[in-house]
Image 1 (cartoon, helix red, strand yellow):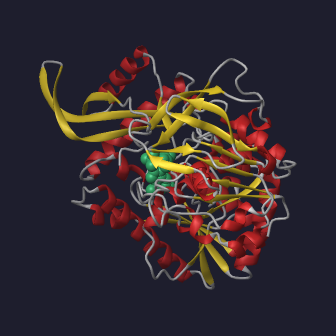
Image 2 (cartoon, helix red, strand yellow):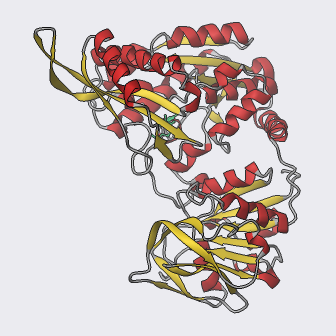
Image 3 (tube, protein in one colour):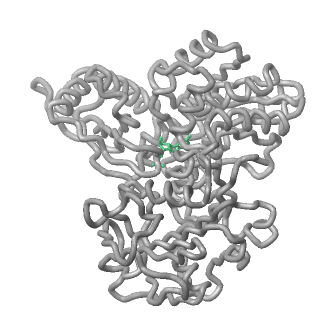
Length: 518
Ligand code: XMP
C-alpha cells in the first residue's frame, strides 16, 4: 500500500475520468480511480482518503437504481468534489433536486460567470471575466442541497459551481479535467491545496513502488515480455529488468505489420543498448495468413490479439519456469476497453493488449504501466535512462499496420503503405515537425482511383495521411500542416511510391474521430 496521502476518485463511468487522475498527478498527488460498484463503507474506511472526487457518468440520477456513492463518503469529514454526474448525485443524496431538463442540456463549450462571494476553490478564476468550461450534460440540478450556495452560473446551468463551504463539499456541472476548460487545472490545484495535500508523489517514487510491486508479484518466477519496439513495451521491459534482472526474457514478435526496417532497428537497438535476453520471432506468415480475407476492424484486432498470445505462449513454453507475461498496457488502453477495474464506461475499441486475451491464458500478466498515461511513461523512461530520441518516438499501435489498412489486408498493400509511410515521416522530420506532432502515419485506403501520369492512365490506391497533436491520446486535434508541406509530400509520395496515385489529408479531430482509422 502506498504511504502517500491518497485521493480517491469514485468512477461513475465518464469517458474522461482518467483525465482527473492526470490533472492530479501533474500536481504530484497520489490518487486511485475505483468504480463506484467497488466502493462501499468498508472500502472507504480501509482506503482512508484525504479527499474524494466523484467523476461524471453516463447515467441519470433520476433513474431508480442509478449509481450512488456510499453514504459514509459524506460523513468521513474529508473534502469532496463532484463533477457533472458527480455534482448531481451529490445534490440528490444531500437533499437537492435533479431533473431531466428540456432545453437545459449543454454539450460543448460554455461560459461561466461568477456569483456570490469569493471561493478558495476558484482562486485564479474570473480574473479576466467569464471562464470557458466544457459541459456535457442532459440532466441538471434544479434545487441545490441545504448548506450549498452558488458561486458560478452558465446559461444552461444556473448551478454551474456550488459549494457547502462549512463541509468542504464542492460540486460543478462542467468538466474541469478536459483541455477545453482552460483553467480547470487551477480548480484541481485549489482543491488539493485546501484538502492539505503536499504534492509528495513523483515519477521517482512511482519507479520505486513499481519495482517493489513487480518483485512481490513475480517472486523467483520467470517473465517474458512482448516487445514491440514502441516506447511502452520498452519502458515496461527496462523497468521489469531493473526489478528482476535475468528472470526476464523479451520476445519481439514480427507480425508482418511493422513499418519499413522496423524489425531490424528494434532488434539492433535492444542488442546495442540493453543487456536483456531477446528472442526475435518472425511470425509474419502466421499473422498475415490468418488475416487473409478479413476486413472487419474488431475481427482483425481479435485475431491479432489472439495470435500474439499464442505466439507468446509458444516461446514461454521454451523458457523454463516462465509464468508471467509482461505488457506495456497503458491506462488509456484499459479505460477504452473496459473502464478501469471493470468500471461502467462504454467500449470504444478493444485494444488488442486487453480485449484479445483469451479466458484461459496459461500465463499471468505483469502490467507495470497500467496506471500511467503516455507522457508519464516517457517521463518514467527518462527516469530509467532511456535515450531521448527513442522516448520521443511517436506511438505505434500493437496491431500495427493492420489498423492503417482499412478493409482487406494484402502483402501488396502493406508493402505500398510501408514505403509511403516512410516518405511521409521523412518529410515530417526534414521539416523539423516530428517533435511537434504527437503521432503521424499514413493509411492505405480500400479504394483505387483514376489518375494520369505521363501520358498514361493510372488506377491505383489512395493514401490518407494523418497527423495529430494530443497530450494523452484520449483527445486529439489534427495537425495544421501548411498547404506547401502537404503539396510537396503528396508529390513525393506519388513520385516515389509505385501503387499510389492520390493522397488525402485527414482533418478529423478526436472526438469525433479516433486517431487510428480502425
Ligand atoms: P485511437 O485510434 O483509439 O488511438 O484514438 C489512441 C492511441 O492508441 C493507439 N492504439 C493502440 N495501441 N494497441 C495499442 O497498443 C491497440 O490495439 C491500439 N489501438 C490504438 C493509437 O495508435 C493511438 O496512439
